[in-house]
Amino acid sequence: MKLVKRIPLGAGLGGGSSDAVAAMSACARLWQLEASRLQESGTFQRIAEHIGADVPFFLLGGTALGTGCGTRVESLDPLPATWFLVAAPKLHISTAEAYLAFDRKVVSRSVPVTPIMPAYEPVLSGEWMGNDLSAPVASLHPEVDAARLQLKGVGGSCAQMTGSGAASFAGFDHRRAVTRASHLLRERGLWAGAYVSITSSQHRRCVFGDFPNLAPQAI
Image 1 (cartoon, rainbow, N blue to C red):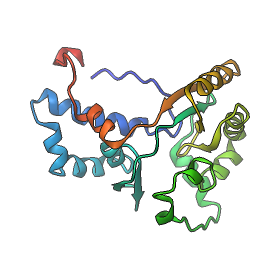
Image 2 (image 1 turned 90 degrees about the horizontal axis):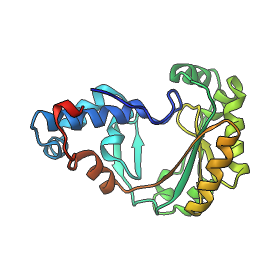
Image 3 (image 1 turned 135 degrees about the horizontal axis):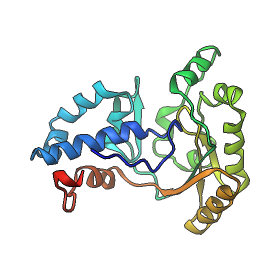
């Protein structure tokens, strides 16, 4: 397989986990197995749980709630189509390093899981958003929080660090605004990419749908 990375490494974007799901689906197709049936039977889920904690989410996609270590995932009502800008400094952060820094701090917070499910307005405003890894990572790498603040500075809402860093994301009202902001951040030396949220069904069509002209020599 030839893997072409289009997002930064070590940025907390789940790239390795999403690549694992894409590889599972591609292998099933190349071996003439029915990927959708493997998904419905739970076979893919069991494989995904053994690969990594984030992998089951990328089987489901869309708006979801992950509990435990992330292997228990359930769909939520779809987030309204929203434009997001992801930005990252030229920095690779080890997930192990981020969690070690977290373990050195005492963090205790109760997250109101049930109320946030139907109410996305306070989520998108940032009122109910948070990442317990942000402060520990920022103490080690101040440039990570600087990138997050730059997202706010160019008009982004709910700016938060992604995963264990180094990237951050923020929401925007429309495509024109997110495009303008992405150009500004690139001019400042950050990696920046604009994306629109998708539903779980859209994600599944991408992962388990048809691969045009897919053949062994194309991988």
